Length: 104
Image 1 (tube, rainbow, N blue to C red):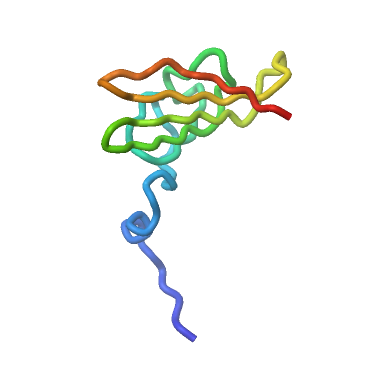
Image 2 (image 1 turned 180 degrees about the horizontal axis):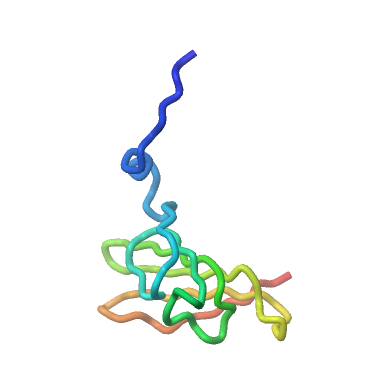
């Protein structure tokens, strides 16, 4: 039987795609580094106002564009369905957020 090894952060990061790395709580929604981030209104600036403000932001940075997907962990009590949002950084600008409703 082989001995277990403890991997340091740099070794784990080299083995996993950057999009799977937890980067902590984002201070702004304009994050460009690949990874996933906790979103909460008392820390994170620029959360879209029409969506629940607690959740996870997934960022995928390619050579040509950056894609962000925001997944709130809940919905406002006045809403009947959950929704998530996506946008891209392309040509030096962010597109507007596009909202998608979860179907049951």
